[in-house]
Image (cartoon, rainbow, N blue to C red; front, side, top):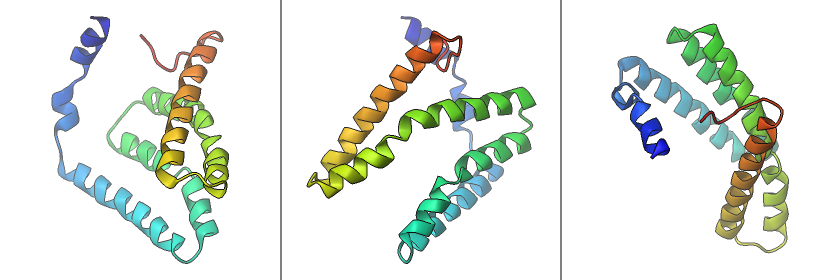
Length: 137
């Protein structure tokens, strides 16, 4: 019941409204991902370096600023991104290990998604004990 009340608070009309600026943001963001993917065809290490850069986070903060979001909201976004990145990091070591040790791509991918989700929720519960609430109720 409580979850339903939270879902009702989400302004779906605002979220689903697409503006011309949204189309520009989409095309630019997609172009960056496409270019990095094309670079991977010739240099997988350079592609990895570019993906490791927080390009999407930087773009998101630029889009937030351009959308006249408050500095507090941008700061919260940046801080939340830091904490949410940490549980994803083991995947970048476990996934290649699994692939090199005979796991199939899809099995390894699903296993790593489950691992990441478990680490994410562990992070949420651990940080709550220290007064950092990543998922407010």
